[in-house]
Length: 120
Image 1: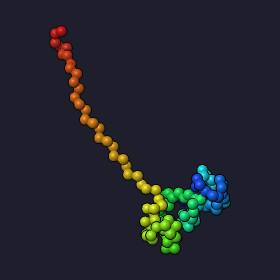
Image 2: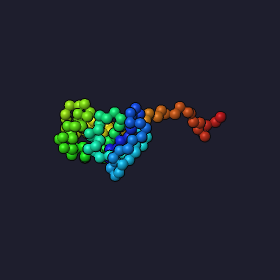
Image 3: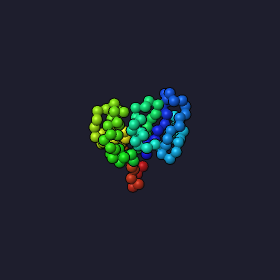
Image 4: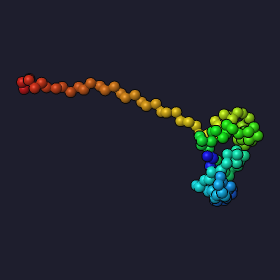
């Protein structure tokens, strides 16, 4: 679900009312609201707003019509590409699992053991 909040340097003030998914909602730099995907696409270049896309938005982006797809690339200042290309630009990058370091081989202990049978 796409969420939007005000940027740190927003010229809209510290609060703004936006048409959210369910109703008019106030947003700030800290408080976001969920908005329709199409609204986020046409507002990507607005320097007052910061949009956050989630992996769950992938299906919607892949189903965008040609007009919205073109608008999305224009808003981002990019050359027209595929819906998959737009997903790559908007969605968070998947983190690859970090390789675990191999445990160091244990060195044999250099302690000497005295035999219980030996004479002191």
